[in-house]
Image (cartoon, rainbow, N blue to C red; front, side, top):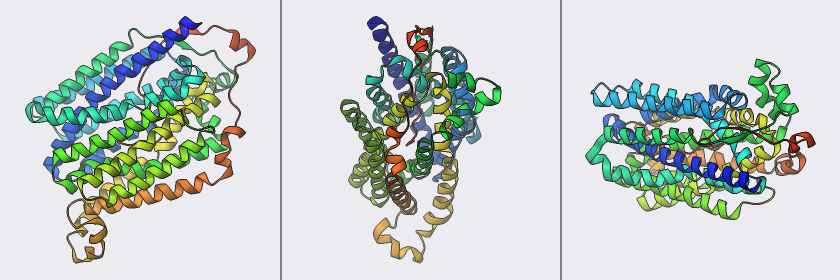
Length: 459
């Protein structure tokens, strides 16, 4: 038993390490493409459209990904999805290399890659339950939250060093290589396949039941559903703001190097938060870690909108990202503790769908308000009353949007936290317990992997 547990933990660490490597490559190429597009257009909308097309598959296809993750061979699903994403990256590389690049090429590649990712993400979230013991799961979930900020620290440094010499084409080639390395992991890893439970049997009774099983499970647990709906509003506030962060920072600072430095500092904040969460493990009940962290992040988001100097922007960005590791990891642990293992793929999928459903509206609305309303308003006499608080240069209009989003995020989360239904949810909702027969069964060996989609998404 100890040997199996050790092997499973090695598998978990290998997946996290190789996926972090892949995320670094993706962040690197993403920064390079972002620099290129903003230099061509000077507008926030094209960057927000990239975020929009990356988000839509997680909303509309996550249920399918969750259903497949619970019913099919996870390793093969993830391997196919990673190879498909590598093929998309290769097509984008060809587009730039042949001087035929058009914006729709990028939007299509992003959409398809994320569609494949919507298959991978629920499977990995569900796989953690089978790889990591319950008493280590909080720290394991916190470790998965380190991948993105670690990449966010490393990628801007590499981009700053290499972009001038290798350009967009070179960075996409690096991204392609990291995809291939990550895909290779799925040729060698295995995880236990969960035994079928009564919840799983009911969910698999028909295609429709299988497709809607995650939502039905959440609807029976009102506190979990309400908390997930609040995550939807939080993501509306934070993901839309972060989707235009590069345009905002370039407008505020006028420097790609400085903007990249602030992005890197924000990732240092996320990385530091993940390390602290991994060491500490959070409170019990976990909700007393989750909700204060969201409120604090909302306050720093508002301060990010008010900041005008590089030092203030960096400090606010660090404070914004630091608490987010205290949100996603404990939420994952709550879901894993209270959901049957053979239903977790679908539950994680529907959790992501509800949490992200408002985000596309944010991308469209924030882009319109920034480019068509508030940024042009900065140049008019009517802006004078706001200049002292938000500034009067490029980026000041976007600052109003970010500040307002931070206030809404903090206040709404405080109101939800005040509800006894939410504060007592972990005590009121029973943990999943295997039946004696299932507990005695040895798990069947299967395979799996990948990056965990956060319920609170920051870019």
